[in-house]
Image (cartoon, rainbow, N blue to C red; front, top):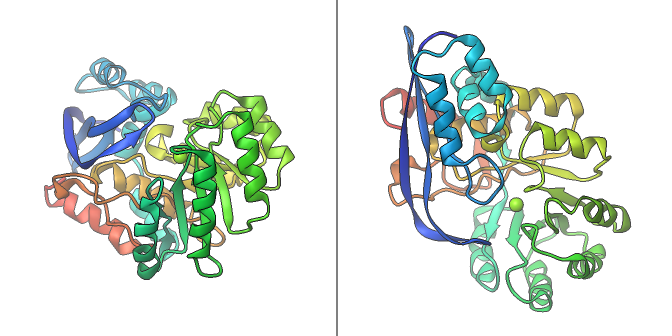
Length: 333
Ligand code: MG
């Protein structure tokens, strides 16, 4: 892999600020990389999620400066071994992502996103009409009792076979989590509860997973390979929500997940279309059969729609991902 590496920093305002535990998030920041060889230019993306525990923008920039404009193969390998957002971007430059899509299933099912609180009711009807059957609802935002009441109304609005995942973003303490898990225990339409407690509450998460029949998923707790290996070794019995853009080299991610046969949900990290094609290709590589719906229903996301990935539909078709590549080849990002 020899060529010339360049990069630019971008800031793209979201269509609407996103609510996070750290306050409103108004714009996406990241780096676009360009790798120029005799056969053309390939682009990729390194974009951290603030407050999520991955790399900072400064760390990515420092890593890029260390690599310089003509990194050697061993420089690149070393940087990719570190994992994280920069390794994702570097691994993407040399990935067979088109093959992953071509060799994957015809389509990947996608989970519909429901906003926190009562706003979910306004959204759910239109998503059902579009054909969504798996939903993700943000919880841990309002009073737990209010949210538990809303959950029953929400489940009541769903047809048979629909499934709901709850995402607490690590916000519950033990008592709140125990109450929620009791509520969900006899509601079979709950697919899983995502990150009920803080990422570092290892014993608590393992205990909850063992004490209740509800499936639990790790998200914030598993950013990369090292986290994944740690939880595997601890015997984590549930799901892993994996954001390829935060993990590292996407080729390694696919190999690891195929070898371990982990129960995985591939999820967007709110990439621009540059990073989205590789994230989506990973979902195809690990899709098919009984694969869970991917968490990639995030676009449209940006004020400038040029940078959006494919808009949220219940099934993401192979052609929609390959089309992202065609557009890139034409020179737009
Ligand atoms: Mg999550």
